[in-house]
Length: 226
View 1 (cartoon, helix red, strand yellow):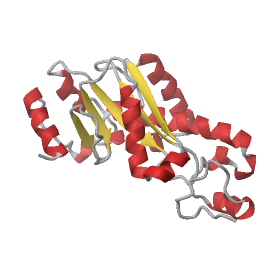
View 2 (tube, rainbow, N blue to C red; view 1 turned 60 degrees about the vertical axis):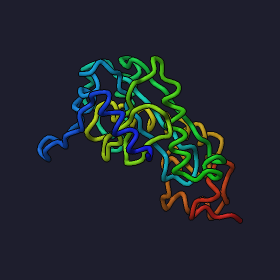
View 3 (cartoon, one colour; view 1 turned 180 degrees about the horizontal axis):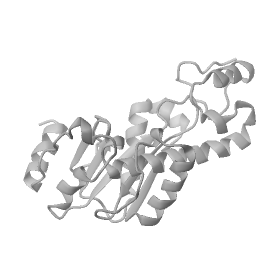
View 4 (cartoon, helix red, strand yellow; view 1 turned 180 degrees about the vertical axis):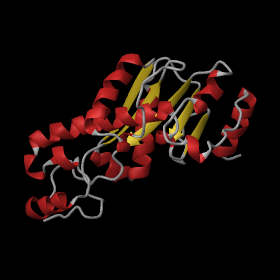
């Protein structure tokens, strides 16, 4: 039996009903429809997401968030759809109101050793393992499950449809941005505070001029070595 089949069967044993896709008219903002299926059987769900798969420099950061049942945090959404000011405001709200938050960070050297997909999954797993209390079920953004032996469900576009995943996306994104601000102070010639290590024209020009620094991902296309 593959892991996907195990999770499907395990979810059935737990009494968790298959998810129902929202009508297009209801997909403008995330809500608690995914979590309610877990809460309704007395279990505790956590949302999981990552930030930083695409950059040429810096770590990949994942977050796992357990929100209180039906907790109101107005404006939750995919972190990429929010302004930096809105993300930072919601970051503080999530920190204040969450039952538990875990953050996992995988550094550039490990990304080069593992590959970015495996590194992102490792960051997610590390984030989940830091949660206290431990969740009974994971709601994971994307389409790839972790190796954790916890019932889980992947949700494509989950940061735009599921509140717990949206909260995790904000925690991961803001945490990574703060890390990149610190790296900017160490390596100001790359202007990490602006592009956060993503492959922008400015970043490529800095790479051509200065070469890579210790936080660049050496296996990524576009990281040019002198």
